[in-house]
Length: 252
Image 1 (tube, rainbow, N blue to C red):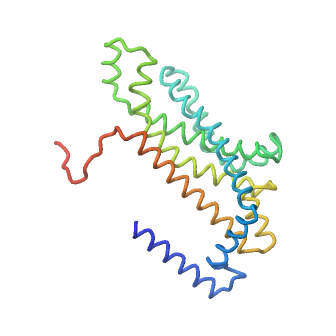
Image 2: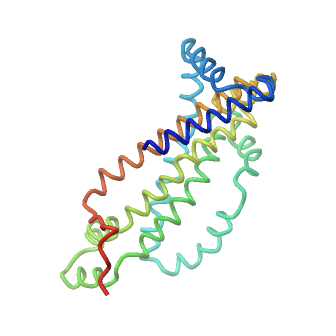
Image 3: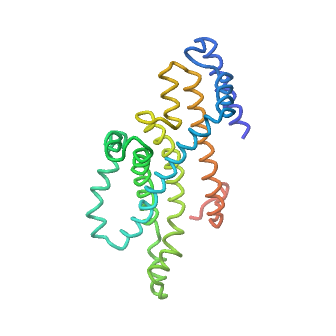
């Protein structure tokens, strides 16, 4: 804990030194950024922009993550369909999602739904591939034993497949949620009149370096808090997993 605090303090010191050397017109200082954030919070400006970006990220994540979670569970029982869809899913994963922002704007307008579409397209593939890996990691011996005992497909999913895939799902969430917030902000940079991305673009366009860095700092804080929340949820929901002691040698 203290090592992270010391590292953060060192970064702030380097930042402050860079601001003193280049001038606040080029590199705003941490003090000025904190003051700008305080002004925005007091006036209610920051809360409105943060809420808009978080709403885009949350909607896009849910719309993309839910089918990304369910589809591997369906394809598990349909090998032929999985083989047919696999190359198309790989192509979709490889396409640069940011290149679709102009199309999303044409299809969904310049409002919130074009940003939601971008976030959903990113979240789907991350959750899909991680969940697929978790499904494939299920011990087939457990499935055979459960089938011999008379377990139905629903019981197999609930008692074996889902518990086995849950750590992989959380791994995807830890990556996809921060990317969802960042993706929403990137989409706002291109076309929006609200959100943290808009705040960054508007401040930079007016050569207000302090405002742009304050919006970036707010975005960074939201991502950090999201990571903490996901880690806490994972620790709570996966408390049943046995913890391996690193000092304990593995059995031969």
